Structure formats: structure tokens, C-alpha cells
Image 1 (cartoon, rainbow, N blue to C red):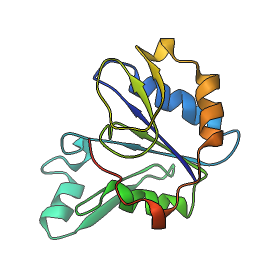
Image 2 (cartoon, rainbow, N blue to C red):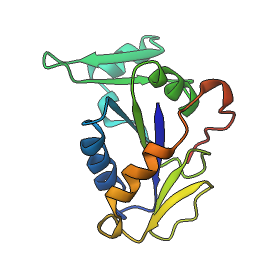
Image 3 (tube, one colour):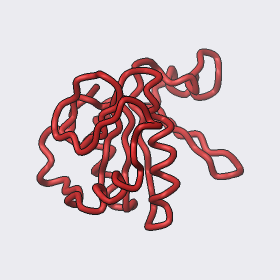
Length: 153
């Protein structure tokens, strides 16, 4: 699995880049994405079923719709845990946020991000997605055994 992170400040276009990369990469294989949240997800709203499951003692809750869309909640999962799981199933993982991780990054805006940085742009509109796709193809495959620090935001 190839892993790339898109990092930058709010309103720099991270989500736009993640969505565009997912669209391009799906022609080459399966794509998963992970978004760094700075707050609890809205899906676990107090009084709703998933929140009641969690309050009842569930450590991990998955919601699945008739259309096949899903969300999950839980604790004690790191970025590394998620990537280790994804590596068994997906060809690509695109991360949004996680600027402190050791994952190769596209840096947007003026936020300082931890290396390695493989592309930089002021905004999503300034980024050449063709160049980024070529960079992704040259990245080494993710290896759970050799990825000690997958860090947080």
C-alpha cells in the first residue's frame, strides 16, 4: 500500500486535494482515506444510538447503512493501527492532517510539517496533481514492520 498525507492549515484545500487524489488513484487500485479529527465525530451524538452503545460499554461501534456506507467510533486506535489494518486491503491510503507523522506529505499553506515533504503549494489550486500522483507511484510501499512513528497532528 502506498501512503501519502495532505497537511496544512484550515481552508488551505486539504480535503479538496484528498478527494481529487482519491478520484485519480481509484483508476489504479483501491483507495482508503483517514482524516485527523481534533474533536469527537458528530456521528456519536449524545442520545443517538451509537452514543448509547458507547455509553453502554462498547469499545468500538460501527454503523452500516443499507447502501453500504459506514462509520466507526472507538478508542485506543492509533494512526499506525489503522494503517496496519488498511495495508491488508487497500492499494492506497491518503491521510488528511497528521502533520507530525513520518508519512510522506503534501504540505499546503504556511504550516510547518514534519518531514518527509514530497510536494508543497500555497493552496490546492496551486498543486500539480499529476506530479503528486507520480510521486505516490515512486513511494515505497507501507510496511507495518518498519514504520515506528506514524504520529498525530
